[in-house]
Image 1 (cartoon, helix red, strand yellow):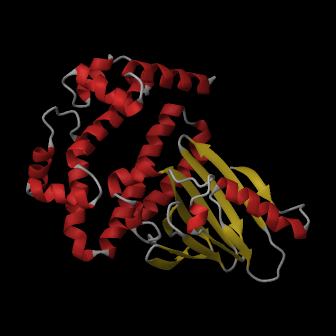
Image 2 (cartoon, rainbow, N blue to C red):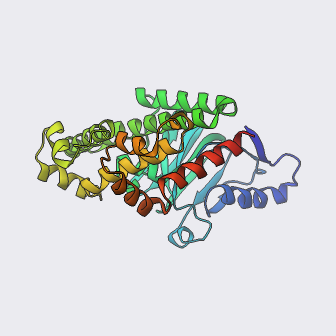
Image 3 (spheres, helix red, strand yellow):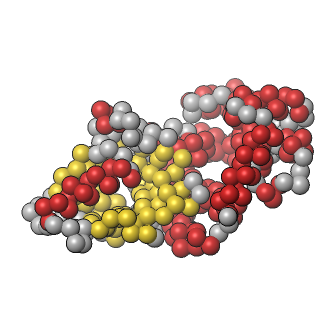
Length: 325
């Protein structure tokens, strides 16, 4: 990772101010203050891999918090969530109704749309990963359901997630853009699995509904190419009535039928931007994503992405080619 900031060589009286300015620019606007009278020491290292932004913070004796006015600041990254993995030390954190102490190996999600507080009482190292909000909420629902919840480092899925992200970070500069995107998708799937496992432990009364919802989403995602996939088929596949499944999706803030079409469009957009599918005509991509009428596909695609499928493919592939030069 590239060193972005270090207090080494900076006058003690200027360290915290420079840290605060850079830290808030890389994360979100925050109110920060030092704990204790010892000179402030910190480093920031970073790297971007595809849509993920990795930042490693090494620091001690710091308290940081966001407030509702700060969340409305123009620099707030409201379209992103932050995965926070404690690499060493202890971090106290509070967001939504969750309040806990994260130790080495644990991780949690910070939601940029609701206030939070974190405190580094001693020296700690934290890896923050900036993730597009939609990549997590598309499968888990609103971030209010899981932001601030500590996911224990001893859980099997957490161990796999932490290991995978660490390896991705080390190998990221050797991956092609296409390979990086595939690895990113796998990493996000592991994060989702870890959060889903932890959420099930937190709310046992809602476990059946949560599991039904996750199974329904997984079934739909795995069968997008079936043109007959519809809400009734999904409900039958997971063993509940259509009305019950629609209620679960409504409680999750979604319309089941609209969500299926959205998933199909996102899958089509992903394939149109992937050189591995360049041999397929646009119509074939649409068919493999569950669309039987190309005009219907083009209309929905333009409504979603503001350009035609062909224009989208041309722009995405041109951007990928330029990135490789």
